[in-house]
Image (cartoon, rainbow, N blue to C red):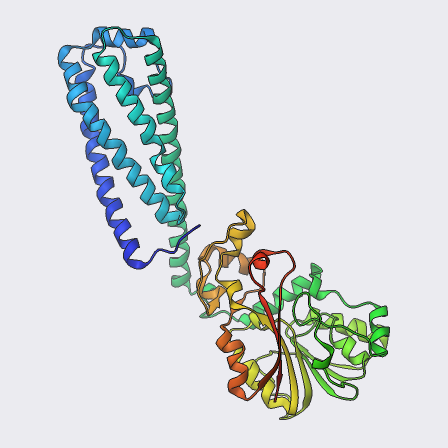
Length: 443
């Protein structure tokens, strides 16, 4: 699991990483100087430096026969002790850097992996320098350890460069956004306009919530037989609707040709308000096909000022308020335009849906705790991911607290008379918790 680092821990890691990097550089240059002294008068390179080619028994015996007594003593008593400290320092540096940049605990093991083979190599070099009867097997094992060490150090260096470049790119994007007032953090973002385009695009892509109902569904609704969804799977209990024949119903943020036509066919006087023009076209299509009378309005669910007080008997509001920043405005307006004893049928997300990194779950099926509630794509998504979402015209979302979702309805005057939970149906958090809520509120 990835873990959020608090500010103090981040500062500590940054401090220790810098100290380790200085220590690594100092030891490295000292060891480079010592290797020159060790190799004086020797025709082949010392064992440690053969990281990608290794060495065989003949190579080892050549080195051992040509190294001077002074060189051997430097190797044994200075170079190798430093070579036990150096792997520890550089492993700690890699591990802290990897963890700091990725927040993944398993990356610590990658940082320390080369040290295991470096220590194995060092122990075998001590044996080769001190033993009288050197065997080929010792040389072979030492050579393998040297090669693996070299490969793992190379992997760690390359990965360090990748993470560094990525972090610099992220920082540059954030700085560019601030300098040029790019709207990716919401200061200049027209969320209504963006999500309008996004849902227009969803219609073009045939999102399941944009596909109109068929003729058979309308015919059944005319007979009083229908089932509508506020949430992904569970139909709304029929007693939540009451008798809707002749009643004024507002389908709020409910475009897509799935709810308004059914309620109109069941005998209600239906008004539909939705932000997406393409979603509304789906309802227009069904209305024309089935000869239904639906008043269709393009607008913002937060602003219902075109309706007079106490206009509607029922508001049908399926999961959609995650696409606006302030759900309390929706509840306040809904309460105002409902008649006394009017009903608000609303579906919305459990905020737990927004505290995990969905992109990471899609990639690895790992639940990564990352965000806080109230949640906003504009405020909390990594800048690069947010820019990609805006560029791709994906809907931007907000995770509202239960205090705002349920408490917000109660605060404006509603009483809650019905409640149930629902889920996606085999996706994301479904194995752990139901992530959708439906409520029946009465004025």
